[in-house]
Amino acid sequence: MTQPQVIDAQTLAARLGTDDLVIIDCSVVLHRPEGGGPYRVEAQWDAYQEAHIPGANFADLVSVFADPAAQFPFAIPTPQAFAAAASQFGIGAGASVVVYSQASPMWATRMWWLLRYHGFDDVAVLDGGLTTWRAEGYPVESGTGALPKPRPFTVKLRPELLATQADVHAALEDGQTCLVNALTPEAFRGDGVTSYSRPGRIPGSFSVPAGSLVDPETWMYQPIDSLRDVLGRFVEADITPVFYCGGGISATVDIFAMSLLGRDDVRLYDGSLTEWSANPDLPLEIG
Image 1 (cartoon, rainbow, N blue to C red):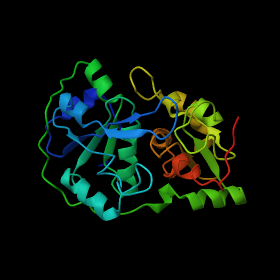
Image 2: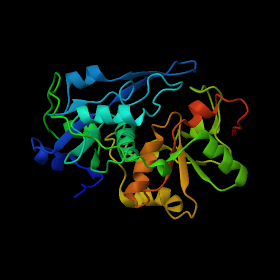
Image 3: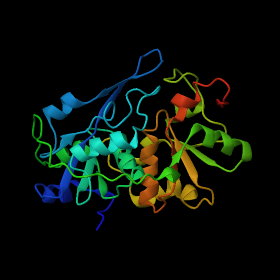
């Protein structure tokens, strides 16, 4: 049976050491220049080695579970590369996966989305990540965990969960889309410095900041009723919504919340503003 999509610290603590459990820390930090411009991405390997949930392994979303040769950061790897990496972490038939982040859940939800896009469903996000785990008094360990026994990973791509730049552009022209921007209100308006080639948002976008869906101190998701208050109109939309952000990461916080509300068919524009803003021929709105 597929486990619930979100798991609390108490439930995970009770499952530590079980044969089917695979725990993945997939934290990344973004180094943003004060004056704007492209951010530098760094997998938080050192933070993982300092403290992680017992039995957890570290998945590098920068260079392993992404295509490091791509033009933009965090591009989806080839199916073959993803399957090989997942297999080495013991992800495959019979595995029950829990993903978490050191702080913001967006890295955990990114890994959740990648697994789901590649056809694997038995994956849950630890609510509150390592922050809540430690706050509730559960143990951590240091060093490098031993990888579990590899499992064969069978890719069953779900292309319907992905939107390309061409898809978004075509949808804008025919009016058959519902675009949701998961960045901060300031970034949505195009205020201040930007990490992208140009400031602004894709025309016609709605604003649902990923940060509004979680508690800023615990990193836990807001209660379901609160999520429904924010996202209900998109859950009920006749048109399949497309979520985007800067690089396909924070938008997965929104997509995960949509899934918790029962809408699991929404699409991610993976290139997001990093790709869109780099093309001067594509429109952006400000204000």
